[in-house]
Length: 430
Image 1 (cartoon, rainbow, N blue to C red):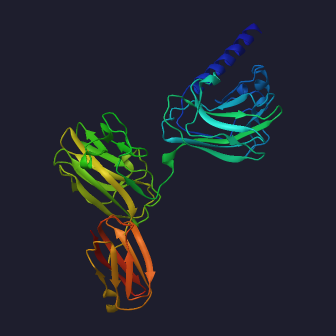
Image 2 (tube, rainbow, N blue to C red):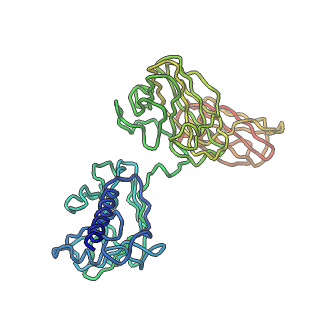
Image 3 (cartoon, helix red, strand yellow):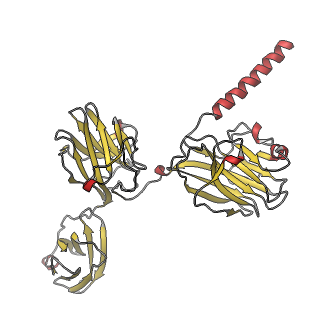
């Protein structure tokens, strides 16, 4: 019997140590519906890496008994994190997430909560055993909870050395029921974007600085935001001390659908490197790269490059593959844009539609008249050279007056389309 008792104690201690070790390992993301935990007891015995604290002057005895995972009041499924308070509005309860290694300015929290009359504030905490280390999120405000589950989001949480996301709740009175469910801690980079227009000026530049938010690199010895871009502004720099392939990968896109085009400026510190654009399935795996364009030489001064319309693909990342054949090659990329293609190829048209003219062209005051040879319905669209539609109107007049004061000076393409076809003309505003 004594041996059996000792064995049981050792098993319990092993399990406790395993649980503590597991919770001491920081995670990057969290997606927790609390379904896998033990219900009914104190949170400390639920088998999760969540913790809770209270400022209740009576100690945490009531917290141990009345805060835990419960199988009632969930937003989805059966279980949720729950607290039943025995303290008033001058005290707080803190729900503290598992340990995180990604409070780095690229992640945010979302969750559901209810507690009629209670208030909630989000923050981070450095010590999950000490509520005095709680820091409110900058710019956040106090939220009033209701008697029904409502979804709340933190917004992007600023970079901090704190390792725990925390929700602090103040109850209006004793006997307040608070429910917390479906918590997610996730990267903003998992959300797709339709367009990108980045000159990297908003990032700190310097040796050792990382890649811009939601950009990634593969195969580089060093990559990040550096000076030395166009007009000595910021840019992405990738460096290879040896030879081979490097990849610079744009944020996750929802529009690799055959209608979009990329544009960027690129240069190297020598004339030996080449680049090739393409798409990629996994932004950490070079083997998932699919080439799109031809292999092109990189010169030692910035040159504006255009990918042409990128074919439709299930891949969600646009990538620039850089190949170096000389050690210690560095490549700089600046002024990256991903926009809708102007689809500027001329279609079949009748002689009536093709007879259009623009005057004055160049225009000095951004006032332009478009003349056509008929009064049929037509669309007039103006595109920037990177393929972005910047103006559109419809008319059935032969002479159409356009006021383009909202556009910057530069070169544009004017596309006139009717049911008989379309034609493109170049327009200069200067």
